[in-house]
Amino acid sequence: MAPSTGQLALLILAILLYAAGGMCSVWRAWSESAKLARTARLCLVLGIVASLGVIVWHAASRGSWLPLEDNFDALLWLATLLALFVLYVQRSRRLGGLDWFVMPVVLLLLLASLFIGPHTGCYVPDAWSWVHRLTAYGGAVAFAIAAASGAMYVLTSRRLRSKSPVGPLFGSLERLEHLTMTAVTLGFALLTVGMITGGVEIIGKDRHTSLTKVVLAAAVWIVYAIVLHAPINPSFRGRKVAVLSIAGFVLMIGAIVTVLLLPPGSSGTGGMR
Image (tube, rainbow, N blue to C red):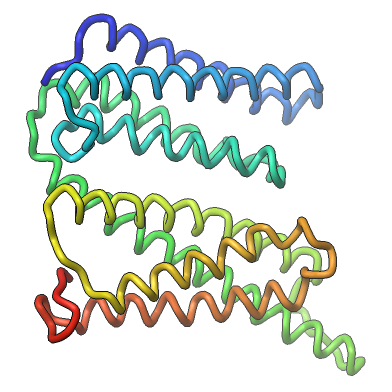
C-alpha cells in the first residue's frame, strides 16, 4: 500500500531532523559545545519519534505490522533501528564520532524509502534477505577486527608483565582497547539488525531454521553485549574484554560454518540456510 501524503510529510520531517542533528554533531568537532550536544541529541530523539510515527501510521493504514510486505516500511524499520542504536550507545557509553558514520546510512535508508519505496512494489522478501545477510556478515568482519585487536592486547599485556619488548607493530593497551570496543560497537549494531531481520523473515515467511544456528547466534549476541557493557564495571575491562572478543569471534565462526554446512531440512532441526 502506497504511503499517504501525510505519511510522506512526516517522513520528510524525520529526515530533516536527522540531518540537523548530524550537522550539529559534526560541528562539535570544531566547537565543543554543550548546547550543540544537547541540540544534536534532541534532533536525534525527535527524528526517531517522527520515523516511529510514520511506521505506526503506515502499519495501521495497511493493517499489518510486518515490514516484509512493503519496501517503504522495511527501509523505515532499518533506519529507525540504526538510529535507536546510536541513541542507546551515546547515552550509555558515549563513543565520539559514531553518529558521523551511522547517521549517513540512516539518511540514505530514509531517502530510499521516500523516493524508491513507494514505487517498487512488494519484492521485499528478497531485499530483506539481502539486508539480513549483509548485516550478519558485516558484523562478522567487525568482530574479526575486534578479535585481532583483542589478541594483540593479550599479547602486549603479557609482554609488558614479563618486561619483554613489545615491538613497533603493537600499539598501547589503551589504543588497542579502544579499537576493540569500537569494532565491537559496530559489529554489535550490524549483528542486532541481522538477527532482527532474520527473525522477522522467519516469522513472516513461516520458515524453519536450524536450532544450532539460532543458539550460536544468540550466544554471540550475548557475549558481545557483555563486552559492549564492560565499561560499566571498571573491574571488567582490559584483558577480560579482549579474551571475550576472541571467544565471541570463535562462536561467530561456528555460526557461519553451521549456516554453510547444514543442509536445509537437516535431521532434528529443520531449517533454512
